Amino acid sequence: MNVRNVVLSVFVLLIGFSASAQINILNAKTPDEIGVKTEDQIAYDNDQPLPYGFVDDRDVLWSKTTWEIIDLDERVNFPLYYPIDTNNIGSERRSLYDVLVKNITNGKIDHVYADSYFTEKRTMKDIEASLVYSDTTDAGIDQVNAGETLDPQYVRRFTLDAGDIEEWRIRGYWFLDKRQGELKYRLLGICPVANEARSKAFSDDGQDNKVELFWIWYPSTREVLHEAKAFNRKNTSQPITYDHLLNSRRFNALVYKEDNELGDRGVKEYINDNALMQLLESDRIREKIRNIEIDLWNY
Image 1 (tube, helix red, strand yellow):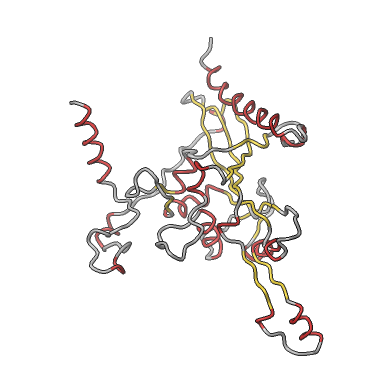
Image 2 (cartoon, rainbow, N blue to C red):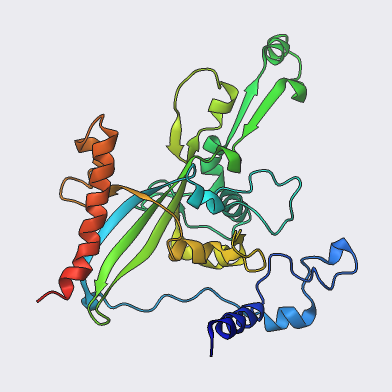
């Protein structure tokens, strides 16, 4: 079989998959039918996220926990950022931030925490102070001081949206599975980082109020993120699920902390005011982890 036949065979197999960015687009008689599955398609579509295999604690020969930053200014990370304007785009395409906030609001995601150690649980009401800010104008204050009822037009409301997210932070667990003899990675938590909503009201104060908005226990979100699709720039007919994108590490990240005897001290805490050396230290941590698997097979 020549190369051309191999390519055609692979192409035919890919067409057979049911996942599609525009479901039913070729058979729709009206625009309203785009994205709507038939009863037969719904019955046939039993796709689920690939389950994690069970790993016994006794099979973990070595492990290391790392915290990483996914910078959304990097082009390779754009699928986690866009689309930020949903007014002129289909409902099947939403940014990762919009997907998470929507499902926190409707209760499908309830394992939300204040920090990356998942010790203090949060609700949507708890994190709303960072996501939404309301401010009364001077005219509204005068109205209240005069004993009148505050007119809603004098209340400014600022809400964080997908375009305000500057980076994602993730916590993951690297470990050596001695049963299979390989290095594996398990994503544990994910967190959006942005300036608080209050900074949108006072954008001229020049202060950087970037904070971790909330942490989510990642395994509890896999069903939701499997349903949500990220844009595939190489083939728009085969979108990538956010769960697949994150678990397969199809992004570029920078290690900013690892577990250590000094209270999980971050890189910036022992390398100050030197961005180049911080980058080199992040690379050193990553190479140290990679070399663990290589050293496993050295005799």
